[in-house]
View 1 (cartoon, one colour):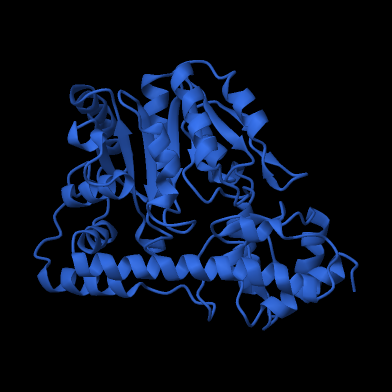
View 2 (tube, helix red, strand yellow):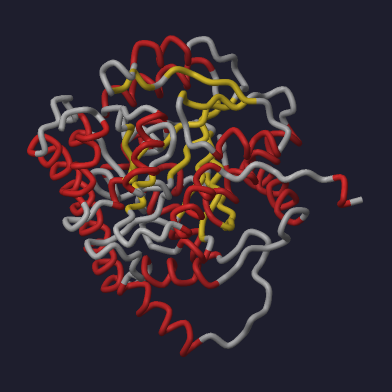
Amino acid sequence: MFETLTMAPADPIIGLTEAFKNDPNPNKINLGVGVYKDGDGNTPIFASVKTAEERLLAHEDTKNYLGIEGDEAYNKAVQELLWGTDHEILTSGRAGTAQAPGGTGALRIAGDFIHQHFPNARVWLSDPTWANHPKIFESASVPTETYRYYNPSSYGLDIDALIQDLGQIPAGDVVLLHGCCHNPTGVDPSAEQWAQIADIITDRGIIPLVDFAYQGLGNGLAEDAVGLQSLSRPGCELLVASSFSKNFGLYRERTGALTLVGKNATTVEKAMSHIKICIRTNYSNPPSHGAQAVATVLNDPDLRAQWDGEVKAMRDRINTMRTLFVDTLETKGVRRDFSFIAHQRGMFSFSGLTPEQVDILRERYSIYIVSSGRINVAGMTKDNIGPLCEAIAEVLGDK
């Protein structure tokens, strides 16, 4: 039976990482994969997480299964990180959370839930969006559409087109929104624009699904939740897919969550019973380690303060590299205006480089960038920024 199979196409980002690993050039630069790198080019373990893991190792007394919805302390901590401790959604019991294997797992649970119980609903994705978004919902048999988001001429948000497209989405459909640090563009709505978006979604009866993978890496942990806060109105319904790969450095631990908000506690209880079935028939119950580390950090004041500082250090480094990148390009003689990159937020940015230019950077200089021109700013260091900008200047014809 298996002899009938042909080779499947490689994932564009994972495939790029494999090509990078196989490149013998000692000066190669990887700006493709979405992984945070520190100033030395390493992906570190947070000190707060390491302390939490040491405590878990010392006190763990069982390897028994978690419940289908995961660790209760973790789920509570996830909700409080999203909304704070005294938000109406939490005090009224209108939120239910299920631990998930990463943000991707949370999105897939949402897709299965939508397909099984709202088969006529479509999921609307921003144009552009994370390359895996349409594939996740396709695998869950949920049809997708797109709404306009990015204006390549201004390198910014096309708010008028966005509002116009949201105004055409029928009630009962789902719109996927990036909570902050939009991937791949790095362009986020302002607080005022988020309010406009929330007004349209509320008025039309659209269900928002917020992909919240980068909380804390934009402007701050609370500041990055401004969009979610705008959507979180009395009586609202929404879904939130959380990920702690980036802001806890727990990539390989696959630590995420799906949170559902309903009109009241009874509605949430019913909905969560169906989400639990989606989980049971998929991976049965979630892994424990990463979630316990997150819960330990968030529920300990000292570790929480240490983690806050570590997230701030990540955020500051990313934003510093954005500015340094723009300044170094100018120093190397690049005539094109790249100043927009300094104003974007998060790990990613649309550079404006064409697929052909990306190919040349890879073939001549061993610089790996996604074909769309998306760059991972966190892959830049003070050591590689000079050669990187020199190569871009040559490819653009400014040298």
